[in-house]
Length: 181
Image (cartoon, rainbow, N blue to C red; front, side, top):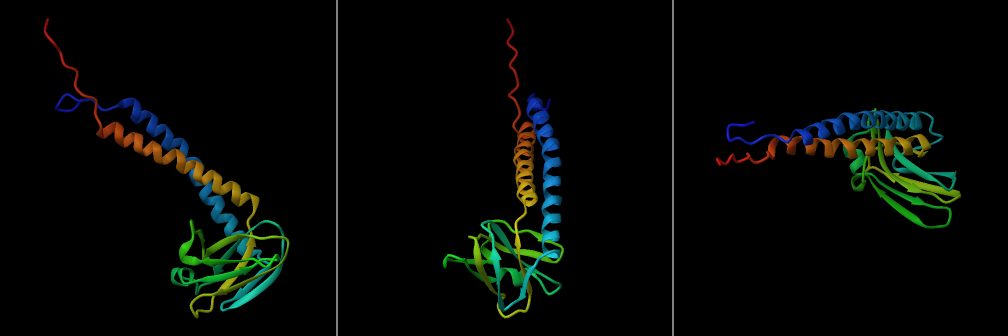
């Protein structure tokens, strides 16, 4: 009880802490799996080239990531990156490194963007504002998809838990009035 007679909301604090505890585990698991699968993808990439340049490959009907890697890779190279993907059906998609919904950095590798291919020959042409950077086109693994789901699930528990805990401490119950009879 505080000096003004108000009480913290213990139930909110307890529920908030439990959500945070149960949210941190999937958050960390998802985080490390995402980093691990991204690193493994770059290490085993079959499709690589240097900017400015292009690469063509036989794509499957699935999702692919475009990653910049190497010691010359910097946030500046990624944010200035422009890649044009020409799909097997003739459609094009432009990836801008500074317009990603979410970006993943793993070691010296950073995502530029992703695209869903159609089966057939696909060409990816990238430029990093004149810089020479190695880029890779890698298939998004099922493990990475699951890892991102686990990561966001952890965030979906941890953030409300934190909010509940803080509100439980800050937004106190009004003091009960004692009336004399």
